[in-house]
Length: 208
Image (cartoon, rainbow, N blue to C red; front, top):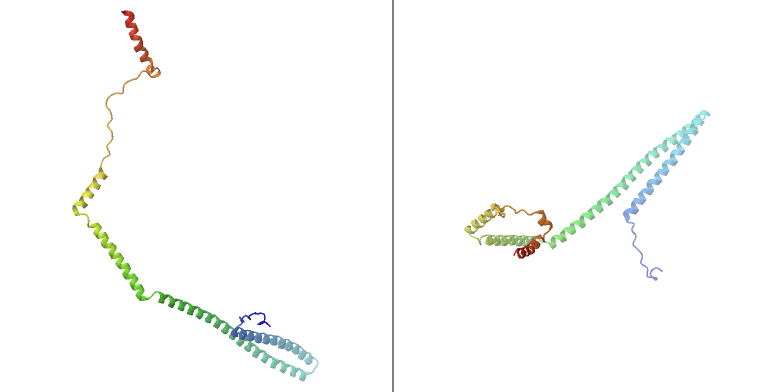
């Protein structure tokens, strides 16, 4: 029916290793439950054997004690099997981690190989040679530019630089003549001189 409606079944994410771990854990849990059950019966039968001894039924008490002894041996075997199952589960889980690490290393190795194919040794050598040629070309240009001036020109430039460095800045001379005194009346009435100049001819005419 799923194919009729066009649905695709998704692949299960549970691997065989996951199933194996699950089965081991289930067996371990069953053994632990068996241990609890045997321990409960052993305690109950020990109490019953004690009661039989008090009642004087020694033979029956001995049979119960032998039974509890056998059950005790079964508990030890169950404990050993539980330990083995737990170790196996831990080994499988650790192996899964190691496999993931190996897969990661494989992916990294493939990536490095692809990068090395993109940049081969010959390509690296070619780039280094071109870089060295560019450096050598620039050095030759610098030498040509530096050699365009003679030694006399170099000395003249240095002498001019020294002269500019120690050249004194020329300041304007300070005048030695005294500054003329201006009266306050002249400062307050700037038109007084013009009035005196006009009145002087009038006085001369009157005198004549």
